[in-house]
Amino acid sequence: MDGTVRQRLAAELDEIRAAGLWKAERVLEGPQGAAVAVGGRSVLNFCANNYLGLSDDPRVVAAAHAALDRWGYGMSSVRFICGTQTIHTELEERLTRFLGTEATILYGSCFDANGGLFETILGAEDG
Image 1: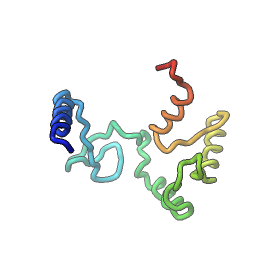
Image 2: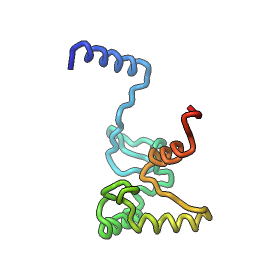
Image 3: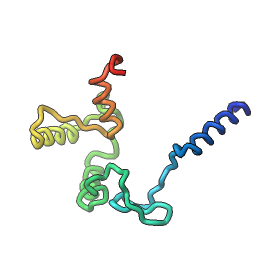
Image 4: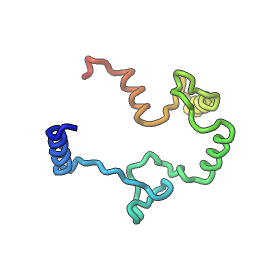
């Protein structure tokens, strides 16, 4: 990398740090829960998607083990190509009945769900 480019990038990163906008990765040293171990100390976890505290619930872990035994690990593709399995559609059908909605679509992450929603309902005129 050219020295000038490296200097410009370093200066920009310094500005980001000085503005308090630098995002450092927090490495968790154990399972997700209301409290997590970070940097050798226990802290309350207000920033995860584990709202119900089920990430390390023994029942969920056991069900995950059973699903791994039956289905293997991962979908091996995005859903619209060849990643949808009957376990997905069965859960969507059960959630639809439970919620009383017309249909349910599962997404692998909140990021994907937001993309699926906002890319569908917003157009260039909404910019």
